[in-house]
Length: 226
Image (tube, rainbow, N blue to C red):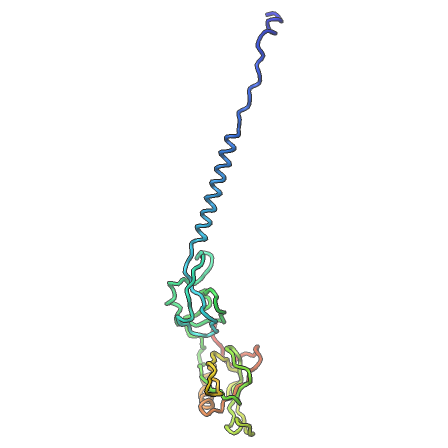
């Protein structure tokens, strides 16, 4: 074949590569749909709210729970992540004792309470009526550590007399509301059983006196926490 014949043959243009834009657009759409689905699932999970128990007011260490101490709130909660007390378990915790001070509006967890009595063996709770001369000017608070004395009635009104120490260090477990008709304050103390009769006698005769000790003082008997 001559050179002129080959030159006359039509020249073939290179094939145009396939346009990939539709495939990329489909992939982008799929990613957008997956992202939207994930967001919807997240919103759905966040919107799954469960009723749990919250402290209606401050709960002191050793306090026995009543229904009035508890309230029900709704919150997002995954029971596999955090141990909280569901509202349906309220009957299981009414009557339980607080292991520590719990501030008001705290969401409650099972570890905060014990169903068994917290007072150790050989101890008892004693109510004491303390007249104005037998206490500091400041009001007693729960968990204060106090020294319990018995003073002769004459000493309570300013005269001299012998004072007897009844309990070296007792924990205050509750404080009664201030009376508008009396200068006396009612407190409940955790004391050894052997000392209870003398403390009760001093309270009955109006000769009980309490001195507040430093906060780090160890009481003679304390709540069981295990």
